[in-house]
Image (cartoon, rainbow, N blue to C red; front, side):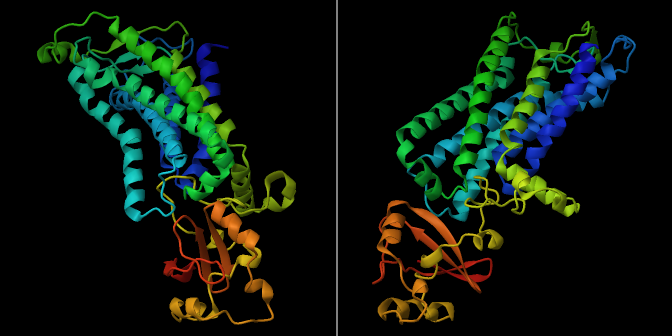
Length: 436
């Protein structure tokens, strides 16, 4: 079996495996993770197509299809994907570092969520868009055509190539390494309060999700950092020449250089294929993914044939004891179905009197003593529960019949005579809810 055939087999499977966790990240709104998987999958898909078109022992690269139009589009994606991958990794590591910071607000405003989304998109899409736009300035020929590898972008050896294109992947890799190191230091520093910090960060991350994202970013940083610097060094090793627009875009610009590869696949193609497998093993076999698979099978009518112990019983996109949001600005909303699953037991109605649930003012419920009823569990809160919630700031949601009670414990808050915070009414998905 030739190297092209092996690459086609492994590359095709890598594409399918990477797309499986992509569906989960799209549903949960993990912007940076979605961009990372899209860049890797797109790179693998184009490499897979090239290996089919120009791979194999029976292909003569000198007489094969020249790839016009197809390669013109493809090389722009190839040249941007390197920056897109390292930029997405930097965005993931940056988000994790922000989660572990004590400066994170318990309640994220719409403006804050929008700002985080813009920052993620600038790292994941902004830099690749810049590289695609400026590539033509230092593009000495249309493209090169390699056997098996297929369409390959070309970059001029003049000095503007360095600040315009070549320097950015190693710079962003350094940024990724900085944030990954920052996460590692903060996790070690706050290891005793790790679970509490995750709950109070309003990021929607469970411990398992945080660790999976961190492992993914750490491994990709460990691979990308030396790789980008090696490629940068090899490019600098070529003699730099004076830039001349007429020479770069002269009469020979449309010439397509064809190069035999002797059944060798470029190493960066193999690295991207391996990244697709790694993404699946990090996200594709976790409890969240298994619940999503169960949801797919239920929709096909096949879920009833599987035991609950194998793939769980929760609906796709939910996480018992966790949250629906995957820790990004997209999808940071309060889901009615998810909120109803968080039952607080004896403290589920302590923050609201019957007057507030019937539409009366909260001020009345804070000045008048609570009415004694036979249902003591709905009107009493143990000191242990109150103190525990004070020590561990977190969002809690409980089903209160027609409305939802939202409990938030944080610093500098006001409590009523039963030790429960009373603030103001809010609206959650057109349902009345009370912050207490």
